[in-house]
Length: 281
Image (cartoon, rainbow, N blue to C red):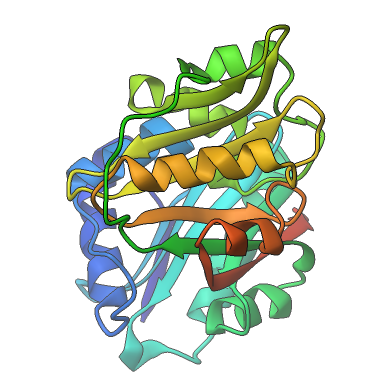
């Protein structure tokens, strides 16, 4: 018999173990650790009370990880053990989180899944509708590492916001939202192109321990991500790091495909952003 339950703050090791067990057949899924889970709590507002585990006997067979902010919830991942798939466990977890948020709020539910994947199919089967599309871009390491030109200056997330470089009304991936960038704290660095009167364009990023780099925010004073100055920043972020540069889950209005291509970035994975409204059972 299968049992389902929402979790508590002391269930983090259980959630980590369940996720790794249920995702072990997916080579693209990075193994989760307790330390990594705590980072996700801090940066993405992963909420243990919104997470669920399904058990058959003593063995976890399915898990749902979800984040929560005042305005909306985000389904970070749903994983079902390969031997227990297509038995309705994933749908049961999704229905349960929807019923809980219909009572406790907020009722808006968001999720992101790779286009055409089983996860996308599950979301659509559960009544989620596609609202946005995001793309992962990847550029190989730059062969040289010259000094940045003098027109580039370092900035913070708050500097970028104060100068109106990010259109807060535009849909962004949960991973690229302003709340996430602020939650990352000092790990996020910024690089900007300045003129005599203002900051013209900015990129927010963080360096990875293995030598690569993630670009988590792109914006410009004019609101047009296609302007050449933003391209200059992308090229510079490639040039002064030895490893590959990843720009994950980018919305088309943030950085058009043609701009990314000109700067040496190739489109990799396409994600679909889904939304639903929680309903009680």
